Each structure stands twice: as structure tokens, then as C-alpha cells.
Amino acid sequence: MAIAVSQPQAPARRARRNSPMYRAWQRYRKNWFAVAGLIWVIIFFIIGIIGPWIAPYSYTYADFLHMHSGPSWQHWFGTDTVGYDVFSQILYSIRYALEIALGATCVSFLIGVILGLWAGLAGGLIDIIVMRAVDFMFALPSFFFALILMVLLGKGIFPMILAIGVPGWAGYARLIRSLVLAMRNGEMVEAARALGASQWHIARKYMFPNVMGSMVVSLAFGIPYDLTAQAGLSIVGMGLNPPMPSFGNMLAQAGANILGFPWLLYFPAGVFAITLLSFLFVADGLQEAFNPKGGV
Amino acid sequence: MVSQPLLSIEDLRVEFDRGEDTVYAVNGVSFSIAEGETLGIVGESGSGKSVTLMSAIGLIRENGRIRSGRALFQGTDLLKLSERQLEDIRGREIGVVFQDPMTSLNPVMRIGDQIMEAMLAHHFCSHREAFERTLQLLHEMGIPEPRARFRNYPHEFSGGMRQRIMMAIALACEPQLLIADEPTTALDVTVQMQILALLEEQRRKRNMAVAIITHDFGVATNFCDRIIVLYAGQIMEVADTGAFIRESAHPYTVGLKHSIIEIGHRAKPLKPIPGMAPTVTEMPRSCSFAPRCPLATERCRNELPQLREIGPGHWVACHRAEEVLADVI
Image 1 (tube, helix red, strand yellow):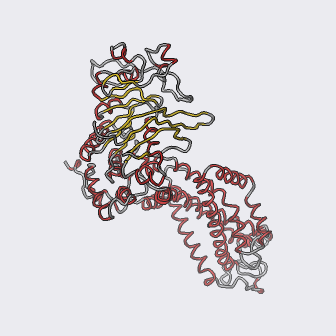
Image 2 (image 1 turned 30 degrees about the vertical axis):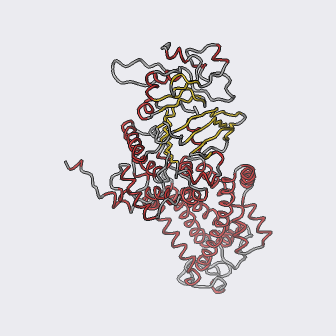
Image 3 (image 1 turned 135 degrees about the horizontal axis):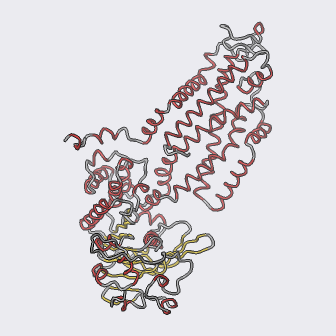
């Protein structure tokens, strides 16, 4: 009776492939969009690192003989109104965009995790104060905060990281707090306490590994948001100063010249849109991989 | 039972804040567990059976507080210990098995690590010994191929297997007292019996005391030496299991017995207890069971019955216990 025979060796072989991370990757792999997004995100990161070396022109080099020329072998994506090479500008922009978006996300996340943990674990008055502050941040558009901070801090990469990062903490704080609260009163933590586990041990071995998935997902959604925010600041003229290249500056200039030189819009906007989509696909994929039942 | 009790709870009162109200979850409960004894604590949901034992070992929700009482474990009052001292006792001297092994195991930790963790956290033995003991425990709990299963995660086990793992964790440090909080409620009937049999086997082998918290009267009468019936945070009746089966002296206990479903064409018709278990929002001044009791009189509605001994080791809190014994209902 071959059907009834169980495979005694099966669990041993399966054991290596059963970790939660491995299973999350298995689910992620099935999502074609997420994999494509991940590939582009990786390329994007690589360009961010090596961009300045592979760029055919420096971002300060203006080709006065070929101002606002269309795409050609000399200038793949054409040149803009002062003769800057659009392709090189994009390569440089990617680096600055990534620096600012990642930096800002880290700042938001750090503040959010600290305040969220504090509110969730301490409870009482601290919880009330932090959560009212979260409500306040949600009530006003964070772009507005970013603008005010840019005015106060002046222009530059570091001020932009702070201006975008500092107002973005509220979402993370609320997520972390709710995760901590749900778990703190949950049976798993109660069982751990019943075994004599200390608070620190519970936080480290029980809470952190179980919220990590949700945190990674919220981080992944945060990066494209901050990418948009940094481009937005540049579009309204509060970002990096030209000639420092940024997607925002390029898009602002392209908007002004859309009738005469449309390629100025096509290429930067195209790259930017694909990048945003890729990040969102990755975030979606992670969401599905870590929370197969749905919800963050 | 001549030996000194292992755990003795004296006049425990626990309250919970719920919005404007105060819920009196445990109202002056006293009992003791002797070494090696199996004690059943029976009651409906919300009768305070879990709260009594959990608050005794310092596991109480934030909105709850212990108003009075003592919980002497080997002579030390657990209620006076610091959190740090309690951590040393929980999982080391007192093990706990919870109702739902699906939610009480850590889903991102290999089960072997979870069992070892209990021993390592209490410095019970060296890392090497903890590993060997874990394999031994898994084997004792009836989990085939311990070495292979060591590296599995909780989701790769069935409900019954997970409960066995919970038991391995609870027994890892050889506790003297095992609290089993509805250990079989979340399981299939056939698996329930296996788990209870395993519990009984381990109790005998390790000579530890077991407190089974259950709402299932059948489970209690089959596996416990002595049974306590709780209702609205008060003890209604305490007796040896034999006395319980032969001569229940409290109308509530009789009602519980009539609520057990029997199999077969000659089974007695079910007689459910009317009404619902109350949530006690004020200190009881009369018999809590009176509103649902078929024998309730004016006295029951005005005077709180005290626990009194009506037979050797048989205590009951009912004004009309003698009539119940004489088979009025």
C-alpha cells in the first residue's frame, strides 16, 4: 500500500527550507510584478552608486553648441535649455534622489519606532501625548511641514533629508504602537511571561521578530513616498539648487518647455515613474510575502 | 494528604477596572494544592478560574489588581515577590500550559529553540544538556523523530502536537506545579484524551502537582483527585472526585452534571442551567447562584452562604446543601 507509507526522512530535508524568511521569499517569488520591480530597484541602486562614473558628461558640463537638441548618439536623451546632457543629469539625479529618500525614510522610521515603542510599552499619559501628536501630524499635510523646515534649514541634501524625514514619523509610530499593543496583551507574550521570560527577552525574541515583517513592508512603502516628496520640493523650487541635478528640477524645467522640447519631459518623467512603480511593486510583494492574509 | 500543601491560596480577591465599573473577578477564594495532587478547577467562562491561578503567579492584566489574599508557594507568598523574583519561579518551579497552542507558541522560532530557551533562561543546565534534554522531552511527549522535528516551526505541527510542545516547554525545568489552563479546549475530542493521558502520565512520572483549569466537568472527574467548583469568583463546592460523582451538594454542581452530554439511547435528558453566568460588578452580598437556582429561597437572596464542611474534605457554600444531598433536584 504505497499511499499509506509516510516518508520518515521528509521532515529532516524540509527543515532547512522552513524558516519564515524562506517561506516569505517563496511567496514573493510568485509575484511577477514584484520580481520585476525588485530587478529595477536593484539596477536603480547600482546606478545610484556608480552613476557619476558611467555618466558621459559631468552634470556641470553644458554643451553650448547643442542646446535643446533632441535625442542623438552624442546625447542619448537629448540636452536641455542650457545644454546639459539629460542622460547624465538623470544618472546623477538617481544618486541624490536615493540619498535623500533613503535618508529621510531612515529618519522617519527611527523617530517613529522610538516614539511608537515608547507609547506602546509605557502606555498612560505618554501614550496619550504621542498619539495626539500623531493625530496632529496627520491633520496637516506633511509636505507643508517639509516646506517650513526647508525654509528654516536652508537648501542642501542634509536639510532635505531632515525636512522630509522628520514630519514622516507619525505613520510608523502609529503602526509600531498598534503592533506592540496587540502583542503585549496577546497569548504569545502571556505564555512567554508564564515561562519566566523577562521584558527585555520578550521584546527581543518575541516582539521584534514578529513585527519585523510589518516594519519592512511599511519601510518599503515609505521609500517611494519620500522619493515623490523630494521631487516635489524641487519642483516648487525648495529642493536642490541647480545645477545640482534632481528629478524635480528637470521636471520643473520640462514643464515650462513642454511644447518646444517634449523629450525633456519624457525621459526624466519616464525613469522616475518606472522607479516609483517598481518601489511600489516591491512593497506590494513584500506585503503579500509577509502578511499572506492581508493587511499591514 | 498529610504533607504540607505545595501552593496554598488564601482569601484571594482580584478586581478589574472596566470603564466605570469594577468587576469583582475573584471574591475570597481559598484552596490548596498538595504535592503530587491533581486538582481540577471547574467553572463557566468568566467564573474566575484562570484569573485565580494566573494572578497568583503574577500574571494579571494591567486593568486588574489583587485586593487582598496570600498565595503561599512552598512557604513564600508569591503576591509579595517582585517581578524579577516571580520570573525566576515561573517556568522554573511552576510551569503553565495554555489553552491555545496555535497562538501561544512563537511562530518565528524553531520549536527546539523554544524548549531550550526555557531551560537556558533559568540557567537550569548547560547549552549542551539543554539540547539533549529537549530531544528527550520531545520524545517523552510522544513527538516522533525529535532530532528532525527540533528544527521545525510551530506552523508545521498539528494542534495536538503543538500542545505537546507546549507541555515540553512547561516541563522543561521540572516544575513542581503545572498549571494547565484549559489545555484541551482548543483540540479535537480524540486528541483531548491523548493530551490528558499524557499529562497524567507525566504527573505520575515526575510526581508534580497539576492544576487543571477546565469548563469540562467530564475532564475534571476523569483526571483529578479533587475538584473545586467556582462560580462568580467564589468557591461553590470542594470535594474529592468520588464524592463529587456520588453526592454533589450544591445545586450548581448538580446542574453542571446534568449538562454533560451522554451517549446512548438510555441517556438522561439534558437539563441545562437556565440563564447565564453573571459578571459581578458589585461585591456579592447574597448567594451569586440564587437567580439561576431552582431551590433559591428568600434566605438565599439575602444572606451570603459561607463554605461549610458537610463531609470529610467536602465543603460547600449553600444554605440548602443537605436538601440537595437528599436528592431534591
